[in-house]
Image 1 (cartoon, rainbow, N blue to C red):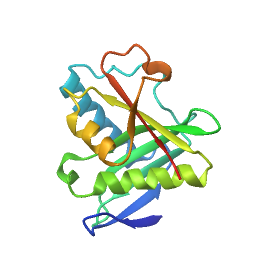
Image 2: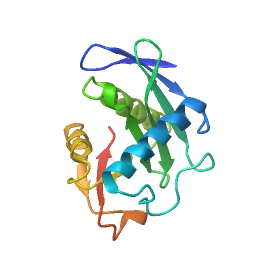
Image 3: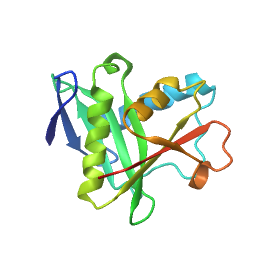
Length: 163
């Protein structure tokens, strides 16, 4: 386990877990429910969904009391780049620095494994404005859709080069 401190001085614990970890499954289910409510459909993801076979890193973020408050995964694109998958923070922990701590944990895991570029896809600005603002604030720049997202009308893609 790794402990990080967010901008709000809250101590978060980041735990590396297997993809099928029970708390991680529950967090991903909550994410799907939220996406379904925002988009009116829960099957909008182009391409293969992440799985235990293709996710290289899966993190669960725990709050100060040890409760799971977020999760995120990394799936290799190629030897130099990785995609962020299933980045999610429960609504009651948003605005607390939890998302920034989780993303920093994913970035650290990518660096440790030698990936120099992180990419991600999120929903369009009309349905996912908070996510778009968050990634831009964290230093991610908008890029044209990549991979399975090319041609998607609801996808916005971002990239960050890791130092």
